[in-house]
Image (tube, helix red, strand yellow):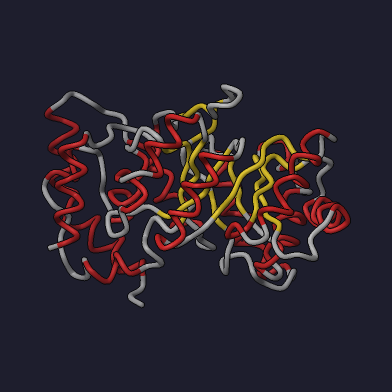
Length: 307
């Protein structure tokens, strides 16, 4: 897979002139990083969340050594310094959940975080969720989700019980593939959910057809995963300059353009690109402020990646 650093470097160089021309032409001295991050409300409560969050699959699956934890701590601090909050993890991410818990326990980070995790499998029960709470060093999980909708008939009642007991504030379901969306649509129609988590990107757009409009109708928050299509979108644009319209959105990198594509959908509450690199975290954050593409420009972005 191409190294994202090369894309960042190339995109910055290719678009610097366009971006600076746009800002000066419109009399805007501030950069995206100097403006407030966009917030979106969770429909079931009205609580506002910052749109840019953090996924931890693979990225946080490390041994808890000072050398391994140092850049991950910087990733979290970069997120929080910009006003971000959402961190998504899972026990199936091997060491990642424990790493998140260890880092949140330091330097007052827990108070700044909206922590989402998952349960799955027929063996899952209250005892497993209590172990997750211990792993994360929290008394209450912000969002507890049925991972990939596995065993949802058993687990959703359990999650509701945990919500009633005050062990989680919100409940939801997740998946990472378009093939699962019919089942997710069925559950959104039948169940009382606070969140769904699903994939959306300029390269994977199926969620926009039926699932996202249904979430808007039912008042369900939407968390977006795989906004770079597992890195494949960077391969599509290898060595290509950003399109001219990227500057109109304040985007200086491909990552920012991809993220703004998903954030711009009105059903989307937040997006959780995974990274272990502080520079990538800082780059992702810039997509959370400034102008967003309208429907026509989103179509142009999708067409650009299709081409």
